[in-house]
Length: 111
Image 1 (cartoon, helix red, strand yellow):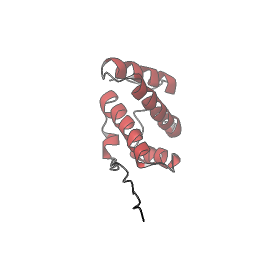
Image 2 (cartoon, one colour):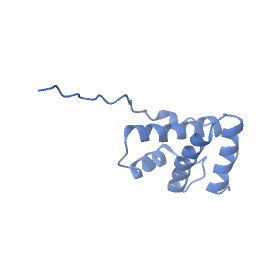
Image 3 (cartoon, rainbow, N blue to C red):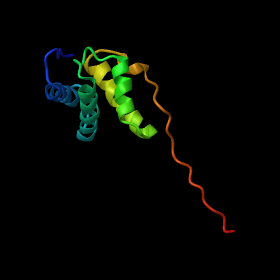
Image 4 (cartoon, one colour):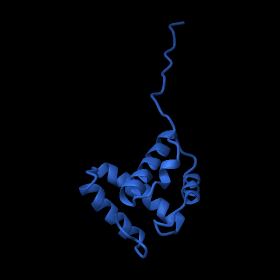
């Protein structure tokens, strides 16, 4: 959607937020989370958003360790939207989302 060869991280995030709010109809909570994770990736990679490679994303995910499966899902979801819907790149689609489900609760017997 946009070209950011010489844009700062904050300029990219502001432009993404405007697009996500109007075109993608994202809410404030989602946008805050996306800004946080995308900003961390952009600062970690120190590359233009168009030059970020799979290795940069792997390095960023490793820098966030330890992380729960839920957090990894949130990060990957944010990156997928940013790259696919905003930059028209499918780079983040290659990452597998961990399956998460409800935690089973063990109820002790009366014994």
